[in-house]
Image (cartoon, rainbow, N blue to C red; front, side):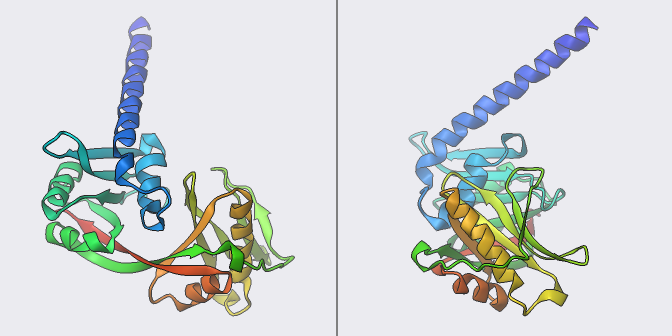
Amino acid sequence: MHRRVGGLAHDALMDLQDLNALKEKRRAIRPLLSPSNPGDALTSYYALWHDPRRTTLTLHYNENQRPDGFIAVCQTGADLFRPLVTFRAPDEATTATLLRTALDRNRPYQIIVPVTLAPAVRAEMEITRSTLTQIYRLDPSQFQPVINVLVQRVATPDGPPRFQIESQGQVMAMAGTNWRSPVFAEVFVYVHPRARGRGWGKSVVSACTAHLLEERLQPLYMMEESNEPSTRIAEGLGYKDTGLRHFVGEARLP
């Protein structure tokens, strides 16, 4: 019995040491990210703010022993079997070192990086599917809320609310946030095929956007370049294309 308690204490101590080590790594890479840049927002969240128990951070150091790159490998609720990977690196050689150090061979990952880093990813990994996503940022001066009495605010287990419209007991449109940092939040939307064309997607995104503004967060909206319905929703609510793009790929290290 005493050995078991001691073992638990030892495990807790190791956990605390790991958490402190991650905290120090996060502090070290802050200069590599811009908190006000929408292009850094997603990477900043996962590298700096994602659940520390679901985040592994690997740093690369230059000849002066200062961090010049990093890679974050994160478990998310969206895909339990395919971790999300995002990183920053000054060149292809650093990218190769980070990928080979931090990733398991032949394991599938979801890679999300600025489009400028895509060639370095393609040089090291086998890509099974890829796309480019646009990054839209809300212009608060252009935001005109859509008032729809059908929209319900729903509490969620992880805290941030969801906004949805139901019909006959089925969710027909829903919006919420994929992640939230101290500065930005990324909005997602889902519209059931039978509910399209009614403006319900715009209604729930409007409600979510208004909530984020109340929380003093800057709403971001990211979608594939070919997703015209999402583009219409975003632009109709005052979101503006930043011109920034993410490379998003399903990939594995051979």
